[in-house]
Image (cartoon, rainbow, N blue to C red; front, top):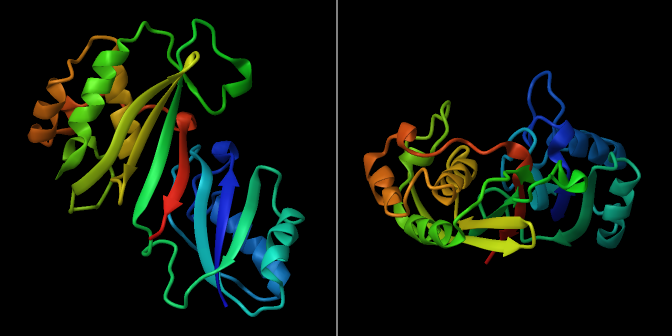
Length: 244
């Protein structure tokens, strides 16, 4: 059977999703648990390679295995083997050609900013405390400049070997929620650290260091140094992976 599993995790203690040498990762934990369940080595494919410290509410992975564990029992079996900060909350049978990484049509990320004067101690792992007075209208206008299909080279983190930097951003919005701001981005795919750089750039607009119209010039420049800083990883969450 080809399995499709939806996963949530607190990425604080992990060096990202993808397995790495000499590092604790989400993939390593999940594969270890599945190997115990099935009595053999199990390899999974994740929909997104979240970075170190980044969280997920709706990460998806796929794998193939025999049917010894009923679909509705698999999340419960994993619950007993995974650390408390990783939860597989849904398991489905997928088509034979389904692949978690190559089949999605869209991914949606949310970057959370704590804009209170004092940080909320209970969300310190999941929201970036940024107490500056922010111009929300300017941030919303700047987010609108990011939407569309274009070259996002200026929003790609250093160290990436991706040569194709053209991306289509379907959604870029700024939504106030009490003392928090939710920066929401949805696209078919993102460049390395692209969401965190967009978040850092929008915060620069909010505090007045950049103007909304500057984003057009930044995009045209294709120069990383023109965009804002890379926002810290703990404010970022992979909210959902959308499959047609």
